[in-house]
Length: 289
Image (cartoon, rainbow, N blue to C red; front, side, top):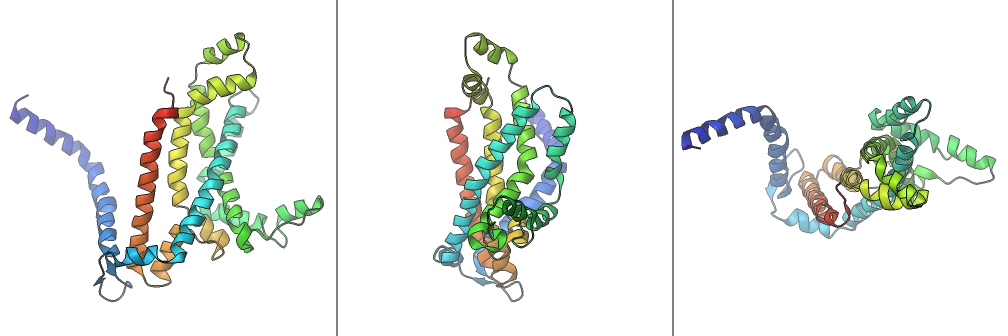
């Protein structure tokens, strides 16, 4: 290809990319650069910025509250990820079978996914109300004294985990259901003919062939888990603090926008490292075809 044709080809490609490239630059890359610049300053959103270099990062890493926020975020992920995956997989396996009303059930289970987080959080805050919530009333009927849920520091994060898993079950179900339907039925049938039990077919055939969908769910759920905010803010308030609520408080409660920007970049670095590790590790356990 001549230089002139190569230049015209490049220009044509750029013209088609511009409608998506311009918003990407204006609303993602430029704000990211601005956030990085802000993280190197001390700023209260009112007075002029004051250059501190890496001072915000050093100060954050020396504050116990920063490590507590990261610890609570990891606690959320550790409880949320297994729960949402196991629940979503169970629903996917159930709805993968021929049954009456299957399409209606799929829609019902997916409905919470498209519901506002604030609405879901308020609903679960009501259900888990320690005084007169339906969950504690039901526990009382069987002689169990229900906990304080979102009012108790020990139960605030489990409350958020429960609400979050319930809301996202439908999303995980759809992804895993698509993965299940992409697995040729001949594989499981051949294993059954060879004498494999239902559990052996699930463990040796279904799960390995479902691993690409599992990998996608794990990556997306981890990234979303690190960014958890709405449900913590609405349900737990100040009872539980995660990284993103810490960023919010540093900016709007304490007037430390520079420190908040630095904390957001620390979170970005952690998410990036975890994602890269996942992508590299998937070669060992993800089976394609």
